[in-house]
Length: 199
Image (cartoon, rainbow, N blue to C red; front, side, top):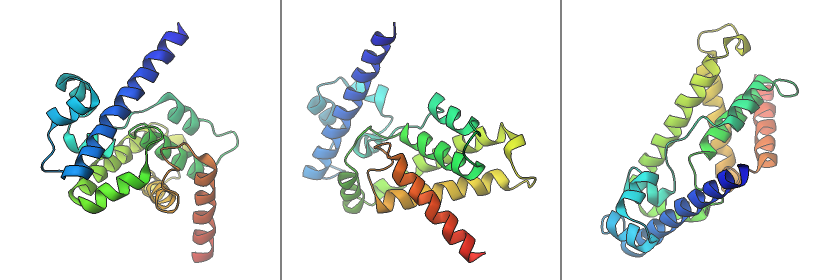
């Protein structure tokens, strides 16, 4: 049973990546406004219906992002308080949730070029970041016993986690999509050090 699930997931990831690659390459060659969903689907070798099963908009396909999900891995990492404090667990939750929305092992330099050449794509990417914040907030609020006794605690933790993930992406662009937990841990340590010295 497990091998078939694994094969299905691999096929889904391959289709996800091929649509994204087609969309990104076409937009880099011709510009965002001049590329259509039909052209992207044709280049990727899929139907328009399949395109929309993977991406709700052309812009999402170009960026290689879709709505984030509450994955079991993210939930397990947050719930496991055996050797990580709350701050680290929230950062891990945020990063894992963000990873669920990005094409695995994508090319972050290409995404950066796309958003530089087409600034309107940044807005779409920020929508996915906001989706990630919302999902992370929901998970944290479902575990009030883990929170400090202040009404703003969940929001503050999520915004701090988002800052750590953004810092990680800025310094090592492939760390988030590539599941580079060591780089993420170093970013957490950097934030701790800065906050400790600033307070």
